[in-house]
Length: 267
Ligand code: NAD
Image 1 (tube, rainbow, N blue to C red):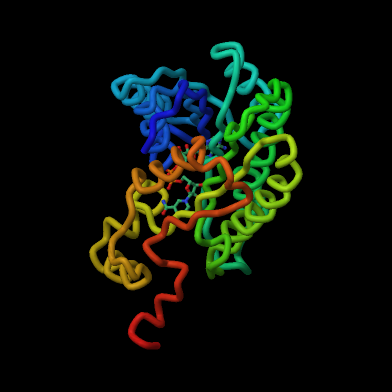
Image 2: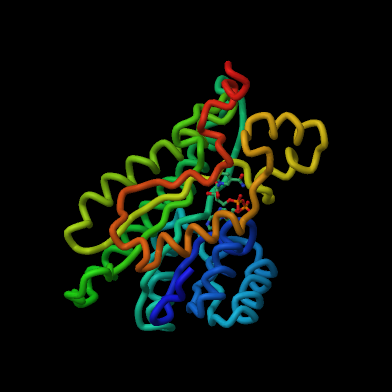
């Protein structure tokens, strides 16, 4: 992959673990300045920063709850105070609060929607305001800013027992496309990555259990569980000049999970 011509400044939400941490480290290896947002795990955020620096990047850690408007506004202010500008925002922070639908509490519903969907709205809105202030470069092949949405295969695959989560991810898909359309004339790009099964904390009850792992692999035609690095490599490319003509698109990083795996043996 071509290195960026000049180091980017990148804000990543939920970057103290899992996919967000992997993405932060990958941008660090590109020499980026990385704002590592975390919610409660300061130690995890410090580890991410250490790895970013070891890879040749620079960064800060910043605690904020992405579902809280005032905290998001302060976080973007802190990012600009530190690095003067922002080039890429990766919306990644997400949670699950699973329950059967009839038993799902309003709190479980609201918590997931406010983190996974409203959080993406708030961070994207602050990003657009900042990107909009940047001078138009006039050059071909250079966006004024890039927004990435880490969504999920459950933006298109229904998921019983996880209706709040799937609804939040389905919402992200239309947020992404509508926003991409609105800001494309401003030379701001908005794209998504929808991971399949990636081994992180969010699903460790599945991939750490041999039986459940076997069942999960049946849903993945490529027959392996993904890693945060699988997602991170795509994120770096999607925010680079090499992908400048792409906006409003979602890349499924899922080992074929969205290919109707039940039909793999001729149906
Ligand atoms: P993870 O639990 O390791 O990461 C989620 C991160 O979000 C954590 O660092 C957590 O602290 C942070 N977070 C939670 N609530 C927050 C809040 N209110 N404000 C700020 N940060 C908050 O799990 P992950 O797998 O790395 O998940 C990252 C993203 O990838 C999520 O959006 C998830 O839905 C998505 N995803 C993961 C998988 C997978 O298989 N792991 C598959 C599809 C999509």
